[in-house]
Image (cartoon, rainbow, N blue to C red; front, side, top):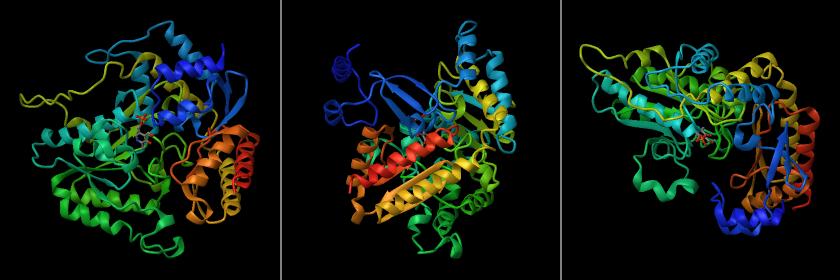
Length: 440
Ligand SMILES: Cc1ncc(COP(=O)(O)O)c(C=O)c1O
């Protein structure tokens, strides 16, 4: 197969997400044919390290043999059946496993395909929770500025990142938003040593003043990823949990990006020691192999959906392929790998290596800020070091040198597979450092 011919047909027929068409058509963009571990193999055999785990999902690397085999086995047995009024062993086993590993009593799983659908289910469940309980007028959501919860319209209203969502702003019902609590840009000028979590005050005020009109608060726990890898303190989440309890608000933790080990614990909520009422997971659930997500709710939330006294409380929500047997099998195999290979317990050495390498990158760039959390490390390039333009050039040069990453404005980040070896991570960091040096 001729690569240029494929690129021509791609430009003719495909529509790429989050990709500017004209620049893309002109570029020699990679066409990946197979992948293994941290390495993507392009059609011409060129190797490319996957520095962002294929949009933050390939936590277990590519081609994980146990997941591949589970998919193969299940595909030969039962490909699909609905979950409306019917069940299958894979969905049952997966829901049970998720209840076991998730924090607290998040005991029931509604499955979806992509993360956005898990968020839609979470928002709708939080709304119907109120009608189930006969509560009126609690129809708004509270969220963080520049939160990202997906690209369906409900999720766009809950979150909102100007760069992505401006064309849709008039079509969505916006949540009430508190300022981002990120430490690197502390609006109170505090340092971690002197921090009193003053950044929680605006959120506390919002909850006090508008909580009675709201059903839930939705946040990305500890890291606002798509909003620019904004990392914030665990104490913020603990205070949020308390404030939600006091105001009778549900807390929705969107763990689609942070779940399954990314922050150094299985779920980011565990780091803060909190239990949300609703938690969304996706991406790493299947080790990034097949589209699957889940909305986990506590028994207390779930029980409000039982019909009672002649009042139907059915949750009229669900998509055709939710809880599909093949994706369920992939997820169960992935959970087996997380458990059997102690993926999370083995992270500390890689986390230190990542932190150290990205610190060197930040130093070499000059005016820049480093942010890290578990296996997430981001460097925001300041204006005097070239800002977003430098980030674009650096990412382009890294690509030429064999590393695939995507910038978020002026922020360059690594989000490698959790299974990256010291050598693989070292090569990613070396390429970044070299690219920084060559794009002055
Ligand atoms: C926190 C968060 N929520 C929701 C989503 C949406 O997930 P998906 O792209 O699978 O629809 C994302 C995607 O990046 C995310 O980071």
